[in-house]
Image (cartoon, rainbow, N blue to C red):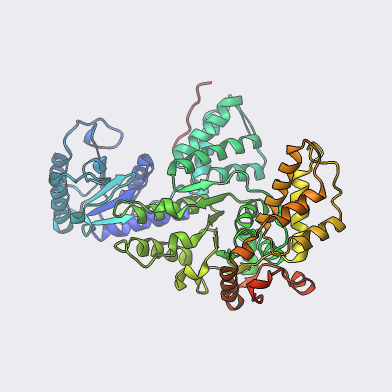
Length: 543
């Protein structure tokens, strides 16, 4: 059974071949996979005249796949292709070395050769198609109107399952397979986002290590994925995101996330609900926005990918747009997944200008994907200065909800102090001993730290522990009180900015703090801040 996404690619290629689009470009590292799909396309009944398939590489020249050839120059191969009398799909590899990019000028003879091919294949008597396959290619401006770009997604779960079954079958007499159906599905999910070759390598390594394939190998496959994502240089795989219990307060936001847990699963369709698109979290710096993004991974049991928008932008014309498309493509291949964009305003806040339109094009690519994406990729974006963001990003339909995270209430401060103290004062810590973490202490600390953010509470505990360490003794409550009094919180030093954030959020966002916490306790506000507005055959392994 063909996976839907590959079927879409196949249908697109068939339509373009029938319409006699002369030159196609497929950006992919998977030469064998592309060649296999194109060979299948060439025999499709939808084509009234079946096509032959001829490949070109620098080492073997023009040759029938699976047979030996003789090296010829690309320009000679292009000229020879125009003289072939039978309908053919020519698959050219290695042309990226001649078409420029990364500061290199394209070779004029190759560019002209492709232009001649495009003209001949479009209007000639014999229906030919030339497909350029390259890992990455910046088309010369002369070819932009001649080449049709076709996107080949990373392999689906169905394709990866074929590879898994093939490698198990090829080594069945020498290995033991101990996988429940649930473990098998988790193993396949762990391999999504890898190419077929990468997935085969991961499965082979897992089997070769102990001649077994079991649930313990899932982590090894995940490590292969981490390496792949790391090599991309665009996304970061967050390994240890933390627990949702590490977040003090924000019950309204946590409840919203909990209600949507599992909503990307096929079973959720019985309730006629779509997979959630994402959430934008704005608010006072240091109050748990990034922590919430990290902890969502453990709450939902999904991989967390962090996008650094700064890495997307590149000094080469066209590279930024390509980087954005590659990032989104990788996130979809790993789906279901969580894509975290931290401080999104720093990447898209200047989408209007000064860079020849690059920011606008990258931003437009992201907006279109955010609106039209079909894969369950939940986007969680955080922002400190949301008023810097373009209004197009904030309109309904982009994100499911916009949440505002304010300074902690008194009730939330007590929870935050409890979490931070328990993390530091463990039984093995020499700082433990003199402090009893009870309601009385937590109430006093919350009162004294009125106007503190969660990050400032965490730093206050660390500073107090340093005081205790300097005297090689246990931590005392007086250390905590003294640290609080010696701290000037952000709510005081940036009172005007916080007031502006609150004024914006009062009419445009949902409070992350629960209604109960807001009604029973007054939100701590320093007096000068104003009022509160609230992703072949089996490989035999050499054992």
